[in-house]
Length: 136
Image 1 (cartoon, rainbow, N blue to C red):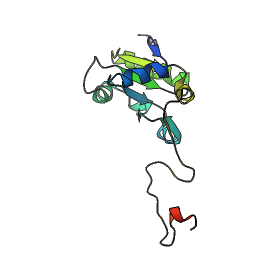
Image 2: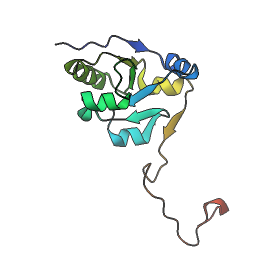
Image 3: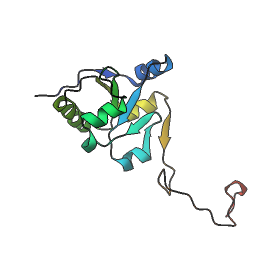
Image 4: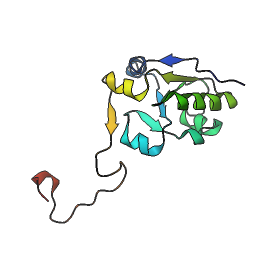
């Protein structure tokens, strides 16, 4: 079975769908570290290795009708993901044209990791350190 990417949409088209009230499930399959550094604000991170029928069905509430939208930074991952979808007979998928960079260039919201710590890690302040005061 060969896998082909059959539906490709622009970041603007996906944004328009969301603005019209459509359910949008945007999945970023880059590794967690890359995702933390930079990703579309509405994206959920799921590694390519964990893509299987049950994980994909869970992401779209078990529906084979609700499309899943995928965003990447490299075409290689897109091809790998498409192959996995074909293996599980999952056809309600679309890929974002231009990948994560195009999302940002379209002026759509992105999340960037702040330098010095990873998103999700606790920030510990020293007792005499007050971020709003400008000194620590």
